[in-house]
Length: 276
View 1: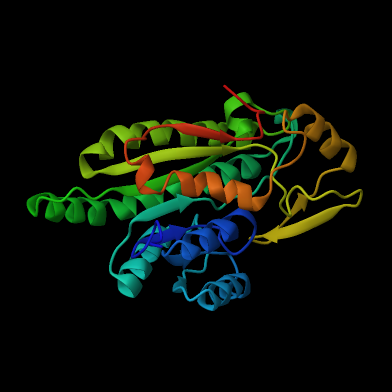
View 2 (view 1 turned 180 degrees about the vertical axis):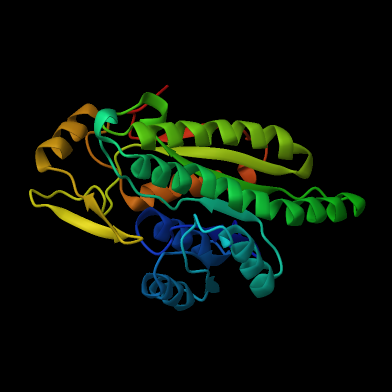
């Protein structure tokens, strides 16, 4: 049986852990070669080892997606390793919450940079390749589709108290998606967005303790009180949090040939919760 993404090359940011890791593994299982990105080398290497164990191919582009040179470096990594780019998934991200009157400029800028500016810089860096590849294919009489999937959140579709920075960034990425759909349609690039609801990751794990992770030297609180998780489950028509595999499935759905005439859309993966 042929694989849906056979011979394609995908860049997945934030793919050393969580949803991004599941997206990368799903793509690899369907035949894609994958560029893995994480802040740290070790998680990226672990995912690459998993992909190779599946018989797939993967390379790492380690570093912070907000770095000024990251977009160019990531595109260069894909082209030098595999010679092409077919899919880009802008998945990297984290939350740094506070109510507006207590939110610092640093908190605002960090989240907007990660969730909005970083995807912009990576896609800008990919444009010359997309343009030249599309031109060559058109001259050869071929119609080849490429895919961009940006990641949003129900915080962007509905807002969420304590997340003015994150909600603004996630609303912004939907606007970017709609605009690039119009700019890049002539290049046969489908640009879509997935807005996640409650998904089980290390950022949303149940805990009554104060847990943090380090992001660029900052201590960022992670985890959700079990009572809030129970409440979120009750508010979700399907009655529970989604799994990272289910989240990955919604991204994959927008990267297969069956979605070639779908562009500029935001699909909500929230178990029935989080509509516009």
